[in-house]
Image (cartoon, one colour):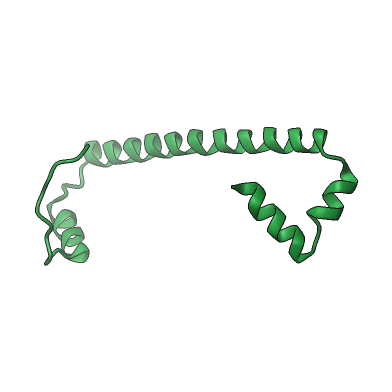
Length: 91
């Protein structure tokens, strides 16, 4: 998985950001490369999140089809019991 490296105890994120910012060359090619990389990463995260949204919508549709409306109101309503049942259903 990873490489065994010693832990730096005197590492500062602020100093690292300042060092990287100072060493970065603001040219058209570098800025374009950074923007394209950011957009590709954002698109990958969006695709991953959308799959989870679709899975949740399918699970909800299945639950609404199988479980009657009255049962939802009785056990998963606005009560403490409804909250507990909802939390245990998530497991």
